Image (cartoon, rainbow, N blue to C red; front, side, top):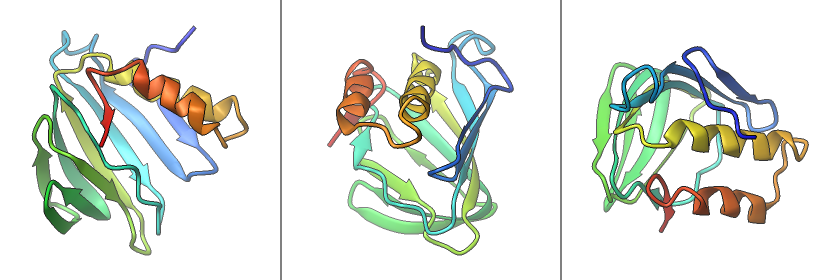
Length: 150
């Protein structure tokens, strides 16, 4: 049974060096949004290009910096800066700097984003932090309203 996050749920992946803490959930906001504080490791790997068909994402960098690809733009966001990714916009973000990054990340509306994060984390945990790509594909395929690979 997949975990449903609550405020304060922490997902740590020791191999990837990531940490995600839920500061708001679909339940705590009446479905309005889900918000996490996400920690990215220094010199992180670039995630796959993806989009969220019906959700808007807002990011504020709390420390460090993120490299961002948003549609046809490429830019770097530093501590104190914010940016938005509109629904349906292909994007990627990662920390290529020496200090990594910590961000506040809000997804509106919440839909099943929190459950998707938990399922992805569980897939990694259950495979000694090296999940099978097909298992990851199964997870994201079960969340078509929240996530699509480009």
